[in-house]
Length: 444
Image 1 (cartoon, helix red, strand yellow):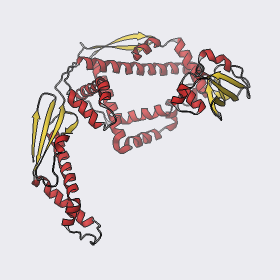
Image 2 (tube, helix red, strand yellow; image 1 turned 180 degrees about the vertical axis):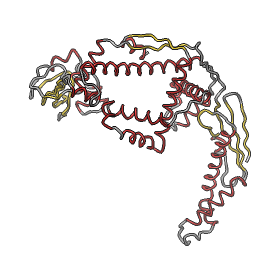
Image 3 (cartoon, helix red, strand yellow; image 1 turned 60 degrees about the vertical axis):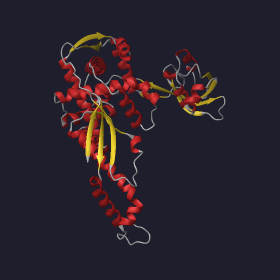
Image 4 (cartoon, one colour; image 1 turned 180 degrees about the horizontal axis):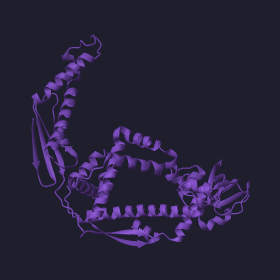
């Protein structure tokens, strides 16, 4: 076997692999013998099929399989042993591969194109400045949060007459529908100027309303009337509602029962402590939002300010071939800048991690998994109920999907540690703003 690297420039190269018969023939003969032992072919006793018969029936497919396995292992070993940092995967020369005569050739040549990671440098110094936008906690947000908590943990009742903020259950029927569908329409899904017509409704009342100017989104229309999204989006005209029930949530009272439901038993024991805990939770949420935006801004800063050559032709070819018809060349052209940005940031993060030996510990991975589970199950109150079972849940999650979950969390923890490392090295300028301004910046 002969392997030759032809480096065209700092980001593009090709690898030629030449195989002689002696490289693959022993494995082919071994596989033929194995087939002969196991094959069940009419006219021959099990285990007594002549090799010549196996060779005639399966010889070519065995040869192709063994050559491809040998190529794959040899190529991967060569890349690893020569410490080649590649982008994507090696791409075989399909045109040349298509000319191979598997029936008669003894020696083979295979060519692969590879994309290489260009040498690049990043600057982790105080000269690099990024702004962290902190959110001010004001009374309005605190009051809205408390109202939402009371609603979330409130009691469902069914009043006689509807008011603003209720949800109305009934049969909804479009003009061209033979039968209506039982659905629930929440006031929050009704356009503000159309809400008044839904006030004062009672069980048994019938209301016709203009669907286009009443319901906020096609998704809600589709759910109300049991139709496809495109059909709901195009729907115009009147819809008839026959009221069957009024649903209303009575806000929860400020008492120990509410405190325990929100934060877990015996975490807080007074209204003052409850409000302090809400402030603490909100501040924590704001800190996470701030850090999420800061991550984006650090990412964008380093993508913009780190010079790096990317093998454009190779990358586009690899994206097209690796997605196997899921994307077109036009899709790749349209999204190419986004692909490159993501690639550059992954390379920068990886290099920082390797250069500074940033590696997650198992305990850190477990803690991250537990945080994810707590978040999915409803927050700190649920964590207190799970107790010691939380460790078991986290361990089972990390072992699932043949280790894929573990690697997913591993990468998240590594990214967190790299992010914190970068923050410690560069200059972070804090700027305090209100929630609305923060939202505008985050959407920009």
